[in-house]
Amino acid sequence: MDCIFCAIIEGRAPAEVVFEDEETLAFMDINPANPGHTLVIPKRHVRNIYDLDEQTAAAVMRATVRVAQAIKRALQPAGMNLVQSNERAGGQEIFHIHIHIIPRWYGDGLRLARPPEVRRTMPIKEAAAGIRREVARK
Ligand code: AMP
Ligand code: ZN
Image (cartoon, rainbow, N blue to C red):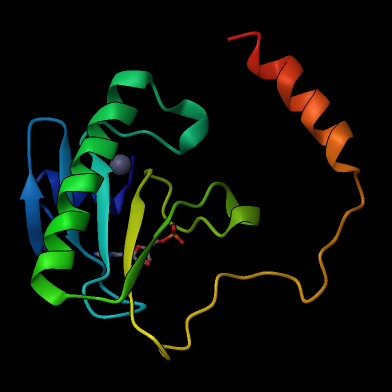
């Protein structure tokens, strides 16, 4: 399978790595939204959140917290966003799960996409009932 992030893990493609442990790798995004924009990935190839097992999820989040705190100390941003996209409709371009750590500064002009008007085609209570039913099945 042709996966650029697996190539980075295996050393077949270059990356500016900032953290690595047994299960995860963190490296600079090649096209940063802001200075310090970093990606955290599991070494195991997982397509996205739908395929993520609990141990890998825990390892990725542990690494994300560690790197986020390091970015805060190193670059002193005013704020920070975590972004994680799933499937094309969600904006996913690389199909090896990754968490974006995006440092934020006042006036940086970045916006998380939101439609101008809140769209409520499905009532909140109805959406919550469906989610509650499914979450109980796990
Ligand atoms: P997403 O839209 O969440 O799938 O984001 C993919 C991200 O990976 C984008 O922000 C890209 O800039 C970044 N990216 C793609 N190729 C590379 C690479 N070789 N090294 C570092 N970052 C990359
Ligand atoms: Zn991969």
